[in-house]
Length: 544
Image 1 (tube, one colour):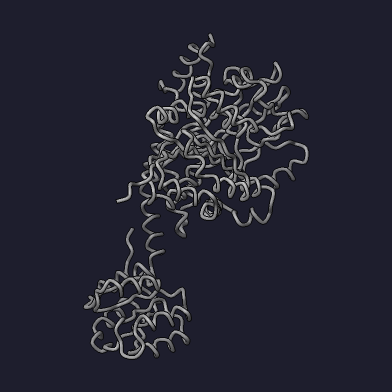
Image 2 (image 1 turned 90 degrees about the vertical axis):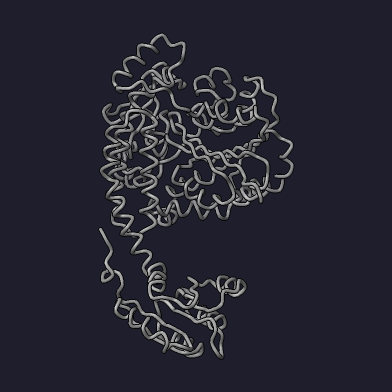
């Protein structure tokens, strides 16, 4: 697919300001043949008058003119039409002139003598950039579509699925930055990938997490390998983070700053990476969140280094059951302490949880006091709170009415949050920074029915109870929680997990329930968005 000049180079209204405009007649004729309408003036005063009368797509402005200079004219034009791109054209190559022009937010800078193709390139960049980027991006995704589809069908290991997800995230970000009509095609491809990923998890998850002393482990592993068609080693999971990432850094004598952002997806990390990429050397990896992909289970597993059942058995005073009213993550500091003690480690550490701007400001004020610690842990709940607010608030749902808008709000939050200031400080420090999350989330749009008693938990992506009724073909069920190292409040407790973009709805008040929760961001179940989550190592770039 190619872009023809006749297709994109139309309806371009230009203003060219130059005291020697007659010498540029050949350039103007060239542009007119390309489909542009060119208005010419010879001084800054006339240029300002023209801008008051008409709206131009782009202005070519000579820097050295009698009367009003190019820079003086530029300031006047920006006051009248701040959104119109201005290309400065000058004979001067003095750095201070360039700095002044760039500081005045010019769109481009051309040195005389200019040739027509230079001007044409500048016009493409500043007038037609969006059209060009959209068409090129669409064309490239179309070329990749079949390759990704083949990759989905042939994925047999967790690394294969990680690669699939990373490619889909890449194209999601690329297409969302354009006015592309390919987003629906990508959405369908993500659904296909998530269906395949769910089948893979169903075949392999219990093999990964089954207790080592379980007599059925080897039998199950053999059967699951035969079913999956591959011998897939267990990936790094929530309870491995300290052992495999944090402790090795501490062993090397590095001071570690661990930032855990609740409910933080790979695509959201990529948005933040664009903001801080010039401050750090970045090593982006992913790991697999345990099930349920919910804070109570996954984050407690990170900090304790244990699967949920072991936490409940070894530290019953630190585990809060689903049916209890108290907060499910109120014991994170002591859980970190138990893990350090279990591995006979003596590092000093701090733990801080930030839920609002006041707590964030207090944390930033005490930043300098943290330097004496070997390990500092910061938990940030803002994105998870935003996700829940989107469900509960019609206004927030309107502001974040799709994936792209939700990412934009995430980015806006970051720019004005404590994290933005914190990263500036960390970039200048000797800390090795680890940024990760406990789980991601998925936009849930497909209701499936489940029936439970009054003690059944309220999460929309997973349920546990002793009298659950559901269609087993629509879920991933674990009838023996012990094999998944999950607590079992009753002897007959069953866990069921939604897959893809499904969410659980009760038959009572079904229509109301579905309309309220449809297209909300949820977590707890099985999807690439929830389970394949970022763990990123950042090191400040050495100042030269």
